[in-house]
Image (tube, rainbow, N blue to C red; front, side, top):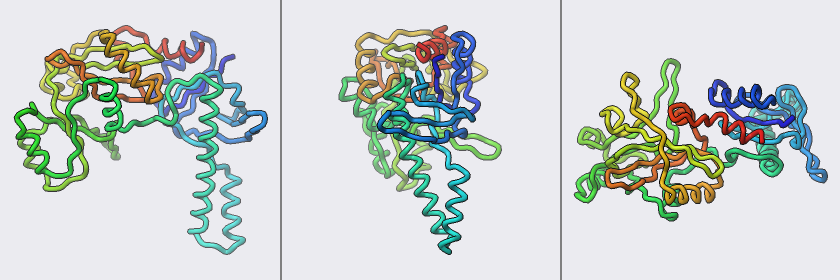
Length: 336
């Protein structure tokens, strides 16, 4: 049996769909590790190149794993109960303080992180890997610079900390208009009763008036007048793209993620030009990713403007409306 290892989080529907296809269509039970599950380290034989671990109460050798999908959060090895008892015992025997215990615990955690890094490196050497455990988040600025060097069109972009600099760009007649977005990807906040996310916003007079004289480093871009937006899922050299006609709705014209549930955007399957696909493929290769999602804009001037890459690669929103059946393609890639 081919063991497929899936690193994900509890409640992730896409992981469940792919796992069910592997289980019921390809007749193999995937090993799913949710963010809070963790793994138990058993042993590592450097000479024989063998690594043993426990997941969900079952022993595995790293050689048992056929493929790995780094879908979501990748946690480290658990700290055993015996180690926690040992830390407390050492502190008591030495008559040390809570600070000593805290430092000792930190050393144990650091040890676990090092072992887990070795484990992940060995997984990538011994098994097929979809995604990259060492690239679960990307620096937007770095990726934009890389995209530009490859020949992709990107928006004019700035990082400012002063109101006067924002006003200067807004008053620049060569700049159409300005938008702002988070520097980091996936900006979500959770409270007991609500969840909040930060979307792209247009920099208007009200926004400028509300700005303090100085503020933390913030990301601004020239607004691209769009014909439509494009979300494309990339897997092992192939692109599966969808056009999103977000500009037809005032609520979504700046950011299609500001969903209008009563009047959803029109979407359709789309094929990126070969020249754009070649440049994007090169970008993925240079980053070190074999899957992920790409956001672009088809401008009213006919340019394909690169915005960003999401290494996690949400593809459900593209798969179903465009009949790509990407869940099956991912499952097939993992099992073959």
